[in-house]
Amino acid sequence: MPLILGRGTGAEYRAPKGKDIEDISPLNGSAALLAIVRFVDGGLADADLELLQRGVDTWLNAGGSIPLERCLGLPSTHNGLRRARRDHWLCKAASLVNADGSTTGSQMLEAEWNKFLIRGPWFIWRDESEPPPEATPLSEALFWATRYNRSESLTARQIARIVGHIFTEKCR
Image (tube, rainbow, N blue to C red; front, side, top):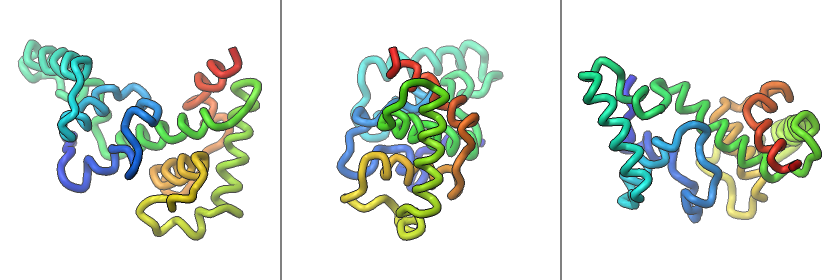
């Protein structure tokens, strides 16, 4: 499935209203996706241009035999894009949790996420297109992670696989 960032599709990969794309943590392994979003929004930086040029150059040199998504390092399916967004927001949530290690942090984030789903605002917000303006940064990140994970949480082990590097960096 080709990557299409047209009407409706690209909007979900942009920063929420009132946020600059630079204010939220980069998408895991998807600098090219952020570069494409900035291209569509008219704010392409020199580094973005270089990244996109390298990917397109690789694709052209391969005679188109390698999919452009692969040359740019982009997820090639809707589910892959959805997981990239979920992981992005989990990284944001992890950066907001104070923990003394990867395992502890992942367990704390799992507990926060489950609390958000079961006893927290998800029940009220689940039909909204975005969290309310008064949402805490952690609730906002969990809202988007939950949205992209189809209203489910993950286990601490799965969370550690996705965001463990953030807790490791914070504990240095």
